[in-house]
Image (cartoon, rainbow, N blue to C red):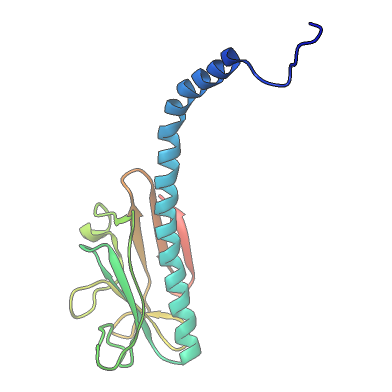
Length: 173
């Protein structure tokens, strides 16, 4: 092989590499898509947990009540300063802190009486949790509040649990 330049690749080698990729990419694509969907669900779950933790800290910092109200049909929630501790937003006086609509997650309607939430309903019939000025979860009747939000994408299932002491955690079920 005297005098031949072997720095490049041949057309045959290039075609073999392209053929291997053509075979492997369709095999890997469904798994990559499933991972993407799983991480989108996990992102929604973490956003809810972080919003609840933020509201707890804001209630302590502002020395006032902060409420999170869930809207099951819309797969969303809203957090606001709750000056009168009613678990209902008064748009004239109470400021909105956060609002989110899940991008992938939905409330698991097979859990907790068909709405996917175990939080006590406010007077308008929406599940809600209120953080008092000491950072403890409460219901709208001033009793201790606790509850769970069951979230799913049809494949994976997670729940965000709020204990009576205010601990917030994520678990799968």
